Length: 427
Image 1 (tube, rainbow, N blue to C red):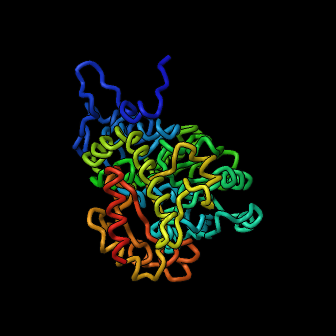
Image 2 (image 1 turned 30 degrees about the horizontal axis):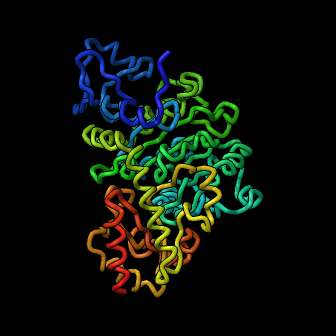
Image 3 (image 1 turned 135 degrees about the vertical axis):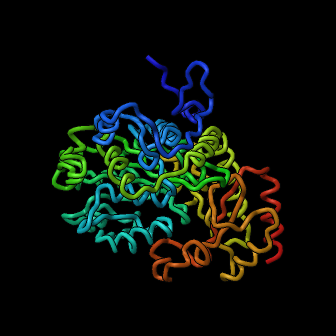
């Protein structure tokens, strides 16, 4: 029996096991198509009766090696890479929702996801209800409808930095016969594995910590294989009834625990095509090889920066789950005992212009749209990533007008602190 590797080893060796004379790094298979000796073999691939590659829009070896590594890190049965984190969230939901369906999400989610769910998916006939993730189980339960198909949340909210009570959300979802989908981008599987707390499906913007170097945009969907789709067959006809586009094949009967993932690839990716380039997956894999080391440094630096900000009289408030007084501290101790991530939310005393002046005074730290990078970077969500939201929507999403999102990198701590200090001295 092959030894089960720990997370640090999986970061380096997961997904790809070279044989004699093969490259130690997964090769870049930069080809759109794959050749077969006869038409019968190709026909079997198209009928899902045989595994293999025939067109990169569906599957590509380089992409699959990296997806397998992420599935191993999360403890899932399978994974699929996408061209962005937004695509991953869309695919994860759309795989089990269709026009006339409804789902529920925490309101403390990334602004782009908030818009995707509340605006774009609404145009497809799929309705979304936003709930306060800290509400009681009874209040959240009241949002469920007969056509509700899933519950969604972020392990650590972006940009509010609140920790989700995963077990509570899983309990509510399963009570209603629907899966819990968790966006686990910020902690990564190094600091939290949501499947261990009852989540059914996990998504990632691999653009962030998994890549860690701002080199590629990507996403990933991982399935635990644990949700009993057939027990709620009437809710999930896409998985539990024949698919006419594959000669009447029923995914749950044909693929068991891989039903959700197979449909995701064979139907949605076939039709929508949001694939990553193999080159991007290769770059992502390089980032994954140091993920376990980088997350430790991100968390160490962020903890000390959060403590400094929390004690500075020019700072009005700080939200970081590693601080004992933080509202998410107890949940973080439960779900994130080894650290959360490098992202801190805080506000300065003053107004919106105070925040902007501080940011403009930074010398080393970058003002960028990005987050969860090796470089320390900063953003004012109300003016940037979430500017499409109304004041009321900002409040509902837990985003104060003065909120600054500071993504602490892995530079030397003293250099990060010095830049923050000198900018504070100028406001």
